[in-house]
Image 1 (spheres, one colour):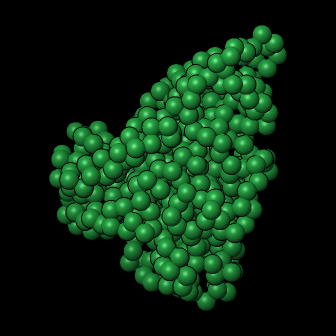
Image 2 (image 1 turned 180 degrees about the horizontal axis):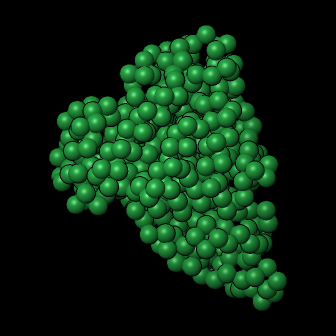
Image 3 (image 1 turned 180 degrees about the vertical axis):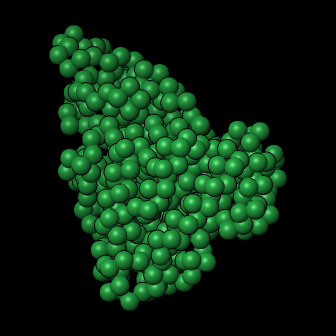
Amino acid sequence: MGRKLLQHVRLIDPVAKVDQICHVWLDNGQIKAIFPKTEINLPTDADTTVIDASGMVLGTGLIDLYSHSGEPGNESRETIASLLRAAAAGGFTQVCILPDTDPAIDHPAVLMQILQTAAQEHLLHPDTILPRLRIWGAITAKTGGEVMTELADLATHVVGFADGKPLSNLGMVRQFLEYIQPFHKPVGIWACDQHLCSNGIVREGVEAVKFGLPLVPVSAESAAIASLLEVIQNTQTPVHLMRVSTARGVELIADAKRKGLPITASTTWLHVLKSTDDLSTYNPNLRLEPPLGNNRDRAALRDAVREGIIDAIAVDHSPYTYEEKTVAFAEAPPGAIGLELALPLLWQNLVATGEFTALELWQALSSRPAQCIGINITEIAVENHPDLTLFNPQHIWQITSKNLHSLSMNSSWYGEEITGKVVEILSCSS
């Protein structure tokens, strides 16, 4: 990578809470020196490439808490290689995948196979900077929600434990939370009562009634969160609540945090940006689980992210083939891609509009996700030479198959022009 001097770049350090225009001298992807914007004696040696980075943003590397890989089992949707490239193109220097592959990541052999595939990708392309791949080990066998996996066999090599699916057996959940304590590993749980969901696919509310689709009550999330919080209160095992999507869910989490329960929480980027109003087109790429909330839900989620009630924004990248998604809304598998789109669309809709500061967004995508998976945030502070993301918020590009690294195209923005593109990620190692 050599030496680069980024002149007039906007440096964002969510750990030190710094947002400033300066000059940054990089050596092989790591920060060598930071100069104030008024500095005139800048390094200009023959080994340093000088880049006018006016208008660009250099921040600590983004961390995605959970996404889905097609490999193993559904490589036509996504391979480990395409997932890593999509994550890099989206500014993510660490990406965590859920264990709902085929076979599920519920056994060391499957886990090691995926890690070896990722390592081989780094070795095959030594000149390409790719993010670190982290893996959630399955809580239950085949992520079926009934029988616990052999947690000790997986613990050494996983970032934490999560099924990525609702766990309806609270007795098993309690047993798991007690058993997992000695391992000191993050636990991710999606709180959702599938019996209350029934066959619903759209969040209940005035806006949703006109669509003529089965409704999912708010209580499908709130009742599950309330029950899970009771178990956490009893066990005192730290838990990360995934995919929070309702205003009521936010209220329950805020109250639990005030009481000192050991929890963190995340929502997804699409739940922050979209609402049931956007479903009028019946675009199957907006068929999600949990479903999009109403406008009040979306506003509550945004407020909660800014205030830290919701710690992080996850991508929950869910690739599907064209054939799988080109069906009626109600028949479409839930999920959408997002690794390459989340940062630019969040920036344009939240930061460029003034609703979020750049620091608030970067904290939700970088330092706070790190805390959720047990990373000491001092490790990612700019002063400690962290992984970095260089982002151009003014670059206009079109979302097409030629411009995406993901093998899947299931996005409601497909074919549209958007503003904001990652230039590169820096300093990652396998």
